[in-house]
Length: 195
Image 1 (cartoon, rainbow, N blue to C red):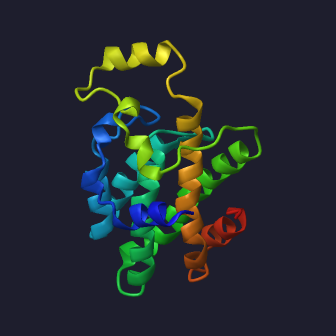
Image 2 (cartoon, rainbow, N blue to C red; image 1 turned 120 degrees about the vertical axis):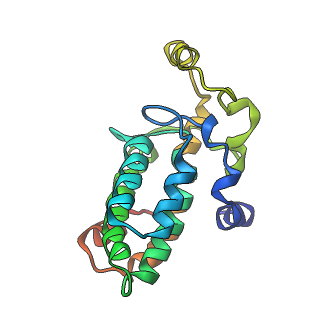
């Protein structure tokens, strides 16, 4: 991974991402920054479970990743790191570690499928996926979004492959952390992540 992409992953804030202009499996990612805040605070298992489920069902579906997925992976990675640090003193963090490892496992499986196929080169930089030409309209219009999906060819090939490529780049950062966790999902994820 380039130094520039690593710095981007390390320094970007959830508020920097135009979530309302990124697609997911079922809608736009408008509320993602709110969900990441709930996950990062790790105060209530019920709230964490609800926020986590909202993110999970929208960033991976039937081995398909979406426009919001690589950006979601950044913040899920940061939450995972914090959960590992806090799990001895916070039962919500203890709950969250294997839950996130399971979600990451589904993402890795989707990435591995696409990596085994012929694909274009990714966009050169992680943040290139936020270029204005790739973002959806500022104001959400369900009909307009549906028409865009119906027309097909929604994303250029290099952008679409970048959803997978940059998700993988974030997941590669997880590998050293997974040695700190002994749950089954973390062990499985460690094996699934290919360099």
